[in-house]
Amino acid sequence: MSAVDLDLLADYVGGALDGTPEHQRVARLVADDPGWRSAAADLTTALALVDADLTALGAAPEPMPDDIAARFDALLASPEFTAPRPVPPRPAVGERTLNRDAPGSRAARRGWRRWATPVVVAASVLALAGIVLPLGPLATSQQDAGAGLTAENAPAIAVAPDGGVPTTASGTDYRREMLASGSMSQKTTPSSEAARTFDGSEMAAATDLNRLGGSGEALATCFAAISTVLPGTVTGADFARFEGRPALIVKVDTATGNWWFVAGPQCGLTGPDELFRAPRN
Amino acid sequence: MTGQDPRTDEELLAAHAAGEPDAFGVLFRRHRDRLWAVALRTTNDREDAADALQEAMLSAHRAAGRFRGEAAVTTWLHRIVVNACVDRLRRRQAHLTVPLPGQAGADDDDRHTPTRNEPAAPSTDHDTAMVVRSALAELPYDQRAALVLVDLQGYSVAEVAQMMGVAEGTIKSRCSRGRARLAVMLGHLRNLGDSPDVGGTRAQDVTPGGGL
Image (tube, rainbow over all chains, first blue to last red; front, top):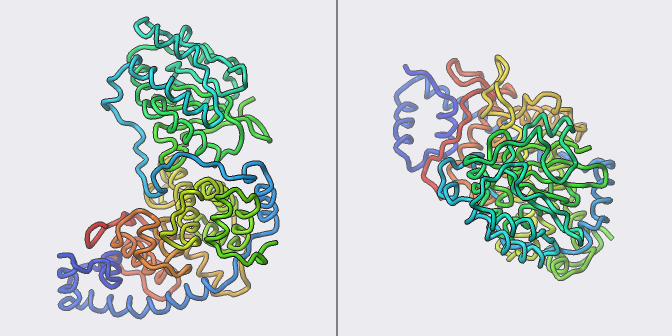
């Protein structure tokens, strides 16, 4: 008599094994093994009771509490909901892997020059969406691509004169505690504490974000995805790293405070790919 | 204004996509409680449910123009809500590191998240419903989400598979295993001697019967 595996037996009884070789194996066990036969009978009986229980739960009302309803009323009255805001098509929401790193990816070998150019294209697309990238620093960085960039002399973030979203690619490896402590400078360049030499690894970090940097649609969709979980205004973004992983470090100002929002390279695909967030002083 | 609008869901969504400012709010309020129930029963946390639902509604608000009517509007909304919930739970799970002794594996469950599982507001006086809801909350979230959609909301296995982007066999398995675990937790079935702990370590999905 072999030991009964409840999950396997549940799969069999529930029809999840239909059409598989496993079905035949479990069917034989149920037919030939008294333990499995008894367990299958017990489970079948029990499932009828579970079905009744779930029916009772399904019939129970679950109204939204008044305080939550008030929050949604306020949200629906906010500018976020005053009009539809079309965004570029993206894949339907579904299951996705959390493997955000793609070590050794082809993109990681492309280098700064290949990465920087599409940002200019991206900016024009973003501009159509009402978001303005500061082309000056990025254009300069492209010219300087061959130079040995460091975080200190990496293209400085420039605030667009019309209030658009300033971006840069510092290659900085941000740390959780730096952001969470609020010790990060509010300056437009990363603080010296966070700064690392812009060597090959930082270059790779930046290029792992190639999808975001290379497509205005992708970056706009990423910002839109971030705003779904942290409604507010994106006031800056740094193509960098977070604890060694390629990441987009985004500054978001909300009605209740300012935030660091760290997004992974998959930002905008099925969500914001949030890695971390912390209040920003 | 809520519930009084004679237009269908599809008409409201189309009106919203065409720029009518209040149409989305009417649609949301029409289905608010049902969407809330899905979010609350899937996340098992009042604040998580509210946040996930907010995230989902913002997504739906923005994606309305891409709705093509392949499914009912309610199905579309439920899909967005449940995926927002699962994304949230998965994100939190990914931030967990080492489970405490005696707890399920980190890839198994979200229910041990420290400090976050405050009790949700009681939904009913019905004792059975309360007990079942508590038991449901103990399931691994993938099984819970599948059961919420199939057994509580009445969607078919095929519909849920499409909503969650997995094979039908995976949803069948999640539902079957979830129901079996509920049977043990609710006292309808003795815990088999060598069976996995209820809510335990063997919740990894199988995809019997092939993929979609």
